[in-house]
Image (cartoon, rainbow, N blue to C red):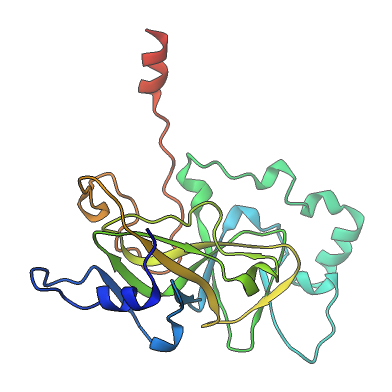
Length: 238
C-alpha cells in the first residue's frame, strides 16, 4: 500500500514510541510534496567511468543557449575531430576497447564533472552517475524512486534498474542517467520522485546488513564489483 503525500509528511515526525521518524528527507520543502510522492532534485556533480570516454572526446559540453552546436563540439581539439571523421570506429563506444567489466574494480575508475548553473549537455552515448541533492532515511517502509513524467517525455532515464531502495537505507540516491538525444540538464532540476510503501514481515534493515554496499553513500557512487558466487556453481555440480 502506497503512502499519500500527507502521510509522507506525517511519517517525517517522531511518533510516541519512536524517537526517530520513519522518513527523513533533507532538505525538505512542502512545495515538492505531491499526491503520493516527494520530488527529488539533481545534485551538481556527475561521474563517468573513465574507460568509457574515447581519447580526445568530452564526456559532456557546457551549455550556451546562444551557441549553435555540431559534432565538432564533442572533441577537445579540431585534430581529434578530423581523426574521428577518418576512423569513426575508434570513437564508437560499441567498440570493445571501451568495455566495462562489472566484476573488476578497475572498470569503475571515474572522472568528475561539475554541472554549471547554465546547464550541461549530456551525450546519448555515455552513461552518467549522478545523485539526488536530498539525503533520505527510511525505516519501516519500502522506498523507491522513479522519473517524473516530464522527464520521461524528454527521454531522460534517471535510473537504470536501480530505482528500488530498502527499509533502513540512509544516504543520497545514486542515479544512473541516460539520454536518448543530446540533452541539457541543470543542477537542482527536479530529477525524480520518491515513493513509500508499507510491507509485511520481519524487518531486515539495510543499515544493519553487513552485506550492504551503499549505505550512507554521498554523491554519485560508482558500482561495487559484482560478486561471482562460485559456490552456486559448485552446488549445481554436486
